[in-house]
Length: 389
Image (cartoon, rainbow, N blue to C red; front, side, top):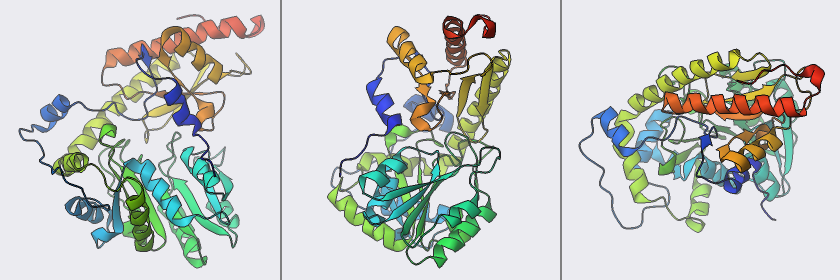
C-alpha cells in the first residue's frame, strides 16, 4: 500500500532553503562544532571505525541508554535514525491490515500516515479542547476494541506542550496490559526540551517495559538533529522484531554518528541545560513582543520550542494560514509553517529556537508586519485596526 505523505515534512521538502527569514524550527537551533567545543571545553574528538556497525547499534551507547531509561539490559534498546525511525520500526514490528491504532490527535503527522500505509484503521483520540490535559484517558480506554494493536501518545505533546501525568500513564498502561494484544508507544522526543534541567522521571523505569515502548533522540533536547541518532526502548519482543526490520532497511547507523553521541553522553546535562536556558529567554522575548499586538493570538508552552500564532477572529474571521505562508515564501523566502500541516488550521507554527537574539527579533518583527498588511488587505473595513508595525 502506498505511503501517504506527511503534510509537515512535505512542507519542508517543497519549500527548501536558503531562507531570508526562518521561523520553521522545532527546537533550539542546531549547535555547530565550535559552539559545542567552547561550551564543553572539548579538546578531543571521537574515534570511529569504518567497518559495518551492528544492526542494533553500539553496545556501550545502548548500555548507557538502558541505564538512563531504567532498563536492566541493553537488548531492550535499539539505536535508530532519530525518533522518526524508532516510530516507524515499532509500527512495522506490530501492525497488520486487520489492526486498529489509537492515536492522540492532533499529533505528529507521521503516526497517522504510518497507520494508513499499513492498512490499519486509525482511531483518533482528540485532546480535550478546554482542558490542559494531554488526553482524556477514560475516553482513550473506551476506544479500545479487540482489534486494538497499538496506542500512540506524544508527551510532551507537539506543539501544545501538554504532558501526560504519571497517574494517566499508569491507567493507560494497566489497560493495555489487560488487553490481549495491545501495545503502547510514547513518543518522548520533546522530553527535556523545556523546563529547567533534565527530567529525571522515566516511564519505563516506573512502569516497566512489558508492552510499552518509548521513542527518543538527541535531535530536540540536545539540539543535534544532524547526527540523526535516536532510540526505541522497551518491550524486548518488539525490539527484537524491529532489529529484523533494521536488517532489511538501513542495516545499521553510521558509526560516526553514534561515536559522536557516545562521546557527548557524559556532557548531555550541560547541553540540555544550555538549550533550555536559551529557549526560556527566547520564549519570554517572543511573548513580550506579541503581547504588544492584541489583535494576535499567541499560545506556547514551557515544554516546547514552538508556539501557535493566529489572528483573533474579531479582526479576521477566516485567516488562511497556508495561503499566507505560501505568499511569504514566494515573495521573500520566509519559511513559516502553517498549522494545517499539524492539525491546527488557521494558525502558524512559530519556532523560536534561534541562537541569535537579533535574528529572532527580526523574524518576529517580519511576521507581524507582514500579517498586519495581510489583514488590512483581506479583512472587512469594520474589523481592521491592527496598525502596521
